[in-house]
Length: 449
Ligand SMILES: [Zn+2]
Image 1: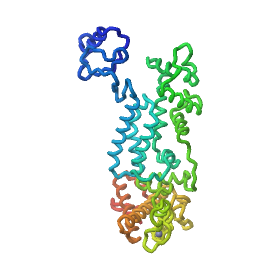
Image 2: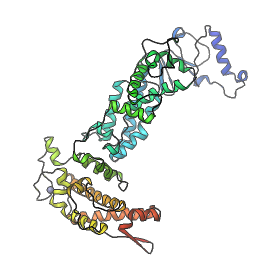
Image 3: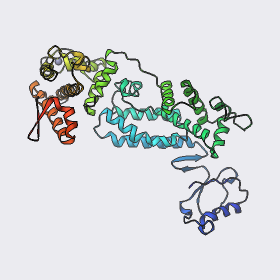
Image 4: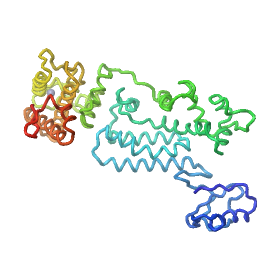
């Protein structure tokens, strides 16, 4: 319980106030105020005065529901504590082997919620935002080089991003929400909003703010930020009539902006394949990196003045670019020949040939139904994942396997996925997903690879 005692002029009246809470008989309450668990902040003329009731009295700042109030810089104190908490939580998750998409889920669902409550009360200082963003992206890229621009990572998946919440936009939006609460409420805090918002809010809510009420000429930092956010939101129309989604989007577009595709493999078709429902996080992660050229190949290392840039496969002397790793290298020919035979059998179409655009980005797929498309997307992603794992084994462990052995592991992975889905999914759903590739005999699934 939080209680504000202001107009008492005599300590005896304050004492009477506490007696009401300390002795439940007076108020006929079952709850009783516990002095050892009670804290008080003395303000103004009350500072340094001896007060009744054996509570813990302080003169500088007090913490209420995780937020500091009082003298000094309570905003900085609160936000610094929150950043320390975020950094500690990120460190806990940092030891685990999580894909990029998994890390984004961790940040959006477990880390950022720590900030939403203080975000509705206090404006976040710029230095805090910089420190938090640095910690989040260090976690996302495991402390290594950031291979994709932050602006891109913040975009939604259908536009090539990872859907990471842009917390400065959301914090601004949450803080400004209290203005909307004030518009529809008759609670006493409304007078604070009208006083501090004053004339600057009148532009957005003309009927609620007038010269007949007292108002501040110099709003605090939080109210100044609200005014700026309302200005941004007003670009979508009447702020009192627009949906929360549109208002948040307006703030996001102002602070982050749209990303213009600068590569032919940045269209919606590519992102649809990357986030195909048949793919797990590991495969989506790899396809997303391929589409953004965000894989540390030897050619990329050479651009950083590291290494010779040559493909590490035996007897291959070509530059190791992304397209070389997954399509142009002689080593991968066997994989795509096998994939071509599988595609011909599933699509019953012998005029389509697997191309580099399909192998890398899923563009120009064969003519077939959605179910077959999903199977082919999964199999091609499994090929690329196996190729990249084998390439990393050569570079980091000096152990490479023959192509036919790696291809056998791809087959085994696909079979394992089918068998696990056979156990996990209802028969009808399993048939819709894997029907073209499997047959069921005597209650057992047979994968035709
Ligand atoms: Zn090669």
